[in-house]
Length: 67
Image (cartoon, rainbow, N blue to C red):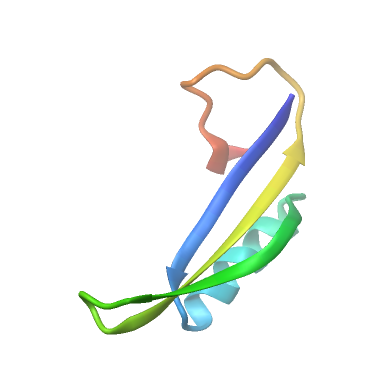
């Protein structure tokens, strides 16, 4: 099965660590990162799509973070 996740967080090192952890679990970057200003909170937010091939069959109950 092919899995897709969209990781997001405030524009801090925590976001970089989240993406790095996913890469080290075998996820692959998909497309360019995105940035947006969260006016309600006054912070920049980051996002990055990642994909991964995995064994098994996808269901809506699949825990993406466990792969």
